Length: 254
Image 1 (cartoon, rainbow, N blue to C red):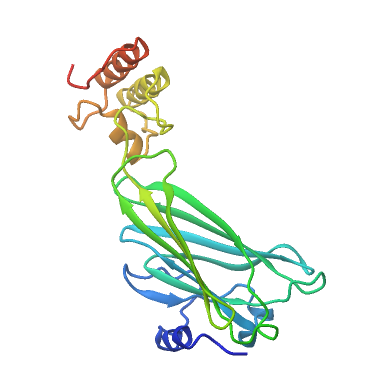
Image 2 (image 1 turned 30 degrees about the vertical axis):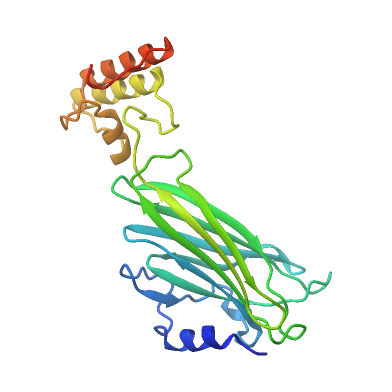
């Protein structure tokens, strides 16, 4: 079994394995521990998944695999921030010796705690069949304060390497963590439903009940930006929607 020298050297100097579920300080990196530990064989590792997160973003990372042993078997399951590395075992691609890996990255971050999800599937070639190859899968995230219904947007995808050396598959994503003023339900549109939600929340608060809005919803509903959610905000959202649905050009300053 031959490892990619650069990856092996880098992995050797990464902080030794920490307890499962540890969340790192922003900017730190760590090689994660598999939950499939009883049957995990370091000698079969022929690939790595690298996940790089921006500040103020955390991720729940799950990797499962389908194989002759079963479907959806748990491989990794952890909460992370900063940069994490996940060693992946290689397998043949025969009917009786294969693994199809399933990756889910559930993201949360930004001032308003927006969430998003990235999924992918991959295979890692067996080291005995391909002793000179090592597969690096990279998932790199940046963040901005723009609004998008789909929080995570794939912005760049590159493949490099070949049979004589290591393969690198790199995907870059932009996380849009902002909010759309007036869009209380986060569906990317301003409708009468948003006005109704704001009014119902105001009714709860004015009746001395606990509000149910999260930070994102409070920011989106406070359209006059006075720091208070009340009937005025609901009325302004409804007026905005009415003008827009009549092919007008609404403004929050009206």
